[in-house]
Length: 325
Image 1 (spheres, rainbow, N blue to C red):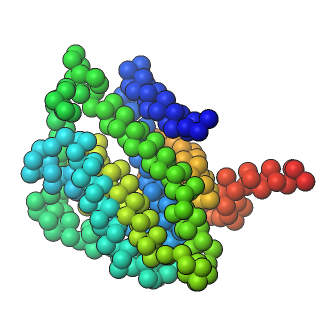
Image 2 (cartoon, rainbow, N blue to C red; image 1 turned 90 degrees about the vertical axis):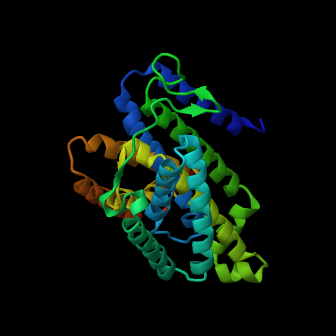
């Protein structure tokens, strides 16, 4: 069937909604939000880093851009969460376009360093921006009864969701599913084939007439927008945000580690990596400090780079090809 994947995506969204109505323990939505957020981050990173071969160390900068866009909108207009996510995606996408235009002429380690520098510059700007709390941070209290198109969304009696965590979980789950659909579409499109050509040999791709700069700019814009959308609900989820939490190195490391563990050659790789590593981190965080958690992520990543450099997806494909001989 032509639209099988799209039907599966819609069924998954319905399934997420059913979960919010059936599960009563809010802890599952609390940790589920983080796993789904990492799925969006990993998928977004893979569009440029996996398909195009341009390693981005500035993922936390785009996520924080979405988060602080939401904070600024809350302080200025007190808009709803959906509007915050849309605005965060637009601003982060434009930032991705501008960053790509300035840095994509660099290659390899130079591009990676430039993206890391971007995150540091953004963190410095936010730390001195008093309107969003500056270095001290700011508290964000979710709207008690958020509305969407005039309809009550969260209310124990009259709303669609009984708790704000359910609402955040459902929104992030919907964004994750849409992000995976976008990544799969790109992988099978001319854009994906062009990015793969750039990854194999950018000089050869240019000689064959591939518009390399334009494709890379499109990829950075889409990737940045996805990360901005994922970051916009962060302030409402944490109820407090400061530069240290928004620009946390953990986001950048996980955004790279999850696609590499799952496999960067396919849209399914970041999904598998985020589900496995994200779930393991959330479970282990109950007993292990976050710093030690990052060390574990680093060790796992090194092991996978040595044993399975193409990730779980690549290892599985090679195993099937080997068994078929």
